[in-house]
Length: 461
Image: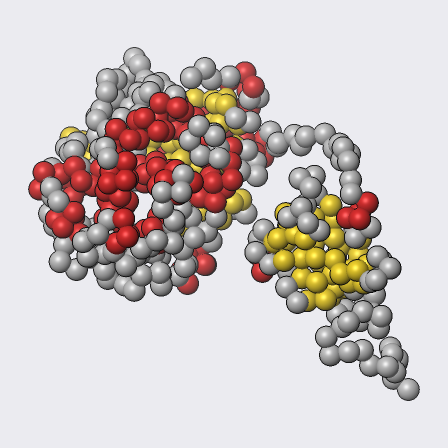
């Protein structure tokens, strides 16, 4: 990947370098590499290392742990988009006999299928996958710890099942399918199931002394879809661009947008922390900024991919230590540094090419009871409805091409909006999922539910 470092200001580049230098030094990690993406291409790469004379570049592989899950989720969503499966299907429909088949595919993607967090011992991350050759060895005698769909409970075995699902429906090994359907189309030729030279070695750093211990790099076998992959900052930068904009050779922009939406019930602590989980992606509110991506860890390695879609900035952070710096915090800071120092320049405002006059006449102020709302036309041919002041329900709506619109978000997601006209063609009111919106508060000329007091508006007398 050709990085275009000149596109960032010198002060920004220095701030990025300072942040990773502090992370490497204070986190006591043998090396740390990072990249920043903006406007659809990499604009910065940095590295810090304890080895004198040379440092890792954007093509050196590190193990990325659970970022692998996002790749597995992409494969599953490809199957959904092709019509091979539905996310609401129970796993049993396509992969029978696992003992966890009541969980739906969507629940497994969102870690809400009720499965255990880990496989039965010994610790799967530090032992050969050959110890768990079958799904039954990964799931154990009691795969389900919680009712399916009731709570978010992160599960490595859940993604093992999704990998097995991909293998069953594609008739080929998970890694082969991944290579053919995702890695090759996106040009991720330095992402692989086994390390390719050059690659970093994984280390454990003693918590009370500046000495290191080599960590084993085990083949995870059946559990590979949950955490097997090795990759580079260059490849993960490309992957971040894909997760932001989509690529019709792999997944559409609409489907990657779906991946970024919360899909699992949040626990109380998650609500407080501003954390959620989508379809193979973690979602986090961090210092007022909405971030999506995924973290990963395996003995000897920590990794993070962080994306701010609103800022169109992403960061990749890879290290080769078992514990030390917090890659998610470093990634969030790298995004913040660029977004604040060099804020995104908006596209020029341009008028609509054409407008339907029957829709234009709906623009402006409407009232739900006494609550004032504004309806606006949007550049994509839809409309938006939002309160004029204070808090209230708001949503964008896509046109259905027949004079109705469907809500895209919030309370009105999936709800139908239509303009109700009088016999003479004039607009009487808006109907939004049975709610009546009128041009005046409680307009007596509109069919307001419950009617309007004939005495009208009055003061205290």
